Image 1 (cartoon, rainbow, N blue to C red):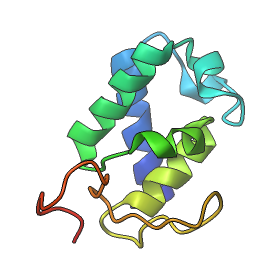
Image 2: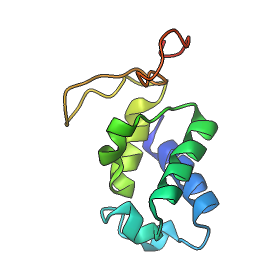
Image 3: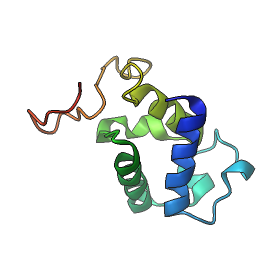
Image 4: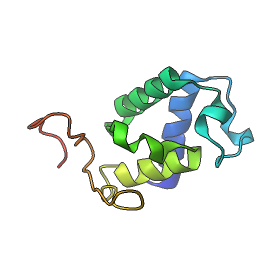
Length: 110
């Protein structure tokens, strides 16, 4: 997934959760909850929406990697099925897209 594709995917998902937010007018390095005015339930809805749109499963342990819009875009780019799994900063764990570790043998993560 390219940066533009990831940004468009995130913009569509944020628009579904917080349609009043103009992402072109916000600082993409500020905390997501601050710029989008969302609470924890909205954040979970955002993660769910992104999963439904892209198939990318975001495990709870990765939520700190989604603190800003720019961080979210980078995460989506690296977690995309068309790129290598996450392997940068923060813990050194690599996880294939769709492999949340929550259940075994779900057939995903190839």
